[in-house]
Length: 171
Ligand SMILES: Cc1cc2nc3c(=O)[nH]c(=O)nc-3n(C[C@H](O)[C@H](O)[C@H](O)COP(=O)(O)O)c2cc1C
Image (cartoon, rainbow, N blue to C red; front, side, top):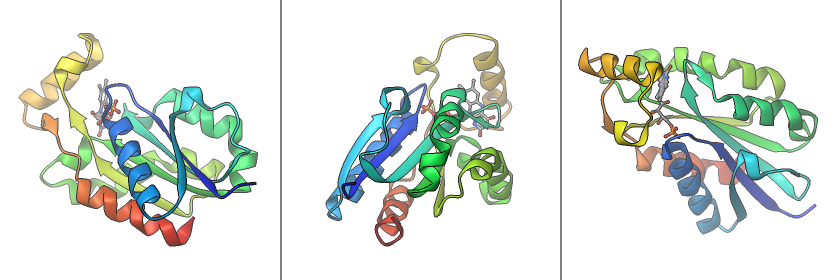
């Protein structure tokens, strides 16, 4: 097996893809050989010695394709260096610190299948121009109108960079 790292992600509106790209870039700058790929393009994880997997949150859960990825590869992931990250809008709320443990609980179904060496929890982005108009996004617009969730791009590139850098010694 090579010393390659796979950074793989599930994203619907692109913000988690951006986080994955940033993590991959930081890992590469620190000397690693890295592939950054959407989960639906990953069929074989055998070439990688470490995997960093991340998903956007919808309805307090990882996206179904991300859970499927973990389920499909769980035996192999358990034999590798594994870290995971989550992107959601709850962590962009002004009082988000009090919700960090709740957000961490949303990731419990992942941890139950493969124990990560590290976990990143990041604020994401709400851009309605990138989302379809349907019942779910209407409800989301309501939470924004009520001042619960903020709209806009709240990705904290310093926090993402710092977490990715910390993976160097872990993976
Ligand atoms: C239909 C829908 C449901 C969502 N549900 C949640 C949620 O339950 N909790 C949360 O914190 N964020 C929720 N979000 C916000 C997303 O997690 C956030 O916008 C994230 O950055 C999206 O990632 P993506 O751009 O990679 O798809 C939801 C977004 C959408 C569109």
